[in-house]
Image (cartoon, rainbow, N blue to C red):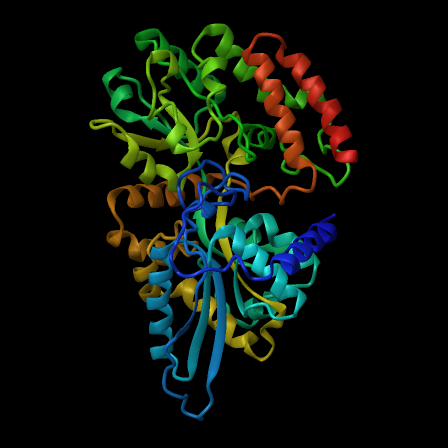
Length: 477
């Protein structure tokens, strides 16, 4: 199926060519699917995450000015492609220029694209065996690109020491591996984050503690509703849903096989429905009529920020750590936003660090392969480079770099860095493998069943049985 998907992309690219590639005049896309940096959506997968949202550069192929030749008279030009916003482009140009100054003979040709155009162009270039030397990669596409032989195994460079990953958490490092071999180096770290109206809860004398259980969380929901009438918004309509987070608490960190659910029985699915059922029955969950108006789990539609009454207002929002800044900027005057973990009855198993994106070396790097690895090592470990990049791609995966640049970050960025380093990292497990074909259709059906619970026409037990049966049928197609 992965081969089939790439074939479709390739065929599409051959039809479109590179016509989507325009001038550097940027056009902003509404949201991404990736995983995540922009902060306009709440998931970190290419269907609901954050990166694409900030992808605003339509197309740009720009050579970074060449440095003087190296001492032996040789010169190397490294091609580098990424998706992202205009600020990312400007920061990367500065960093690559600095790298050229420090490494005579190294120059760059960069290609900065909008999210959708980026993958279309990569598909076309891969067909011509002309992929850029260095690629920005998304978690959802990593396994596909590895299986199609498009990326270089970086394991030998880690073993030789040319690529230093000693300051990277083993779990986040492993997220760039396929079948035990490292193909991608994390460029920024994200994590699930419950954002909440700290001002309101302080007024109510309600204390939020990290690592809440489901009962802890629901007790807060009840108390807020009892004192104010303000309700709670649970995750809704996102591909990276609350369901796999709760399944992880049961030790199910790979909920899909290629042709079935990798779940023992319908009972395991109950927690993913019961919390919604409890909230509706007790009155503290926002109603079906509010959810019906939500077309995406974005800041722009967050019931914590935008509401017309207490019935449509939430005290919290299930998002990602890098979305604290945009939520704080969107919040009404006087509302301070706090950050904590999503609730789980086993937070160590449930919680995880998520790569917002990766750096990879393409199979077409050829004689530039080693120099490209050196560049990635520089982007990962250079404090000087990251003083320019800051947290553009999320919290630095290098603990040394993250600590060093922390004083340069604004208050919200420092809060997120502390949350990643001090709350999530010491108490989490490796991220789930990338989801296979069919998984998003299963999640779509999950939310159809949530709708039935919100409307009172299905119980959580009935919904769990239906999801188990229909989910297996979907995956078997």
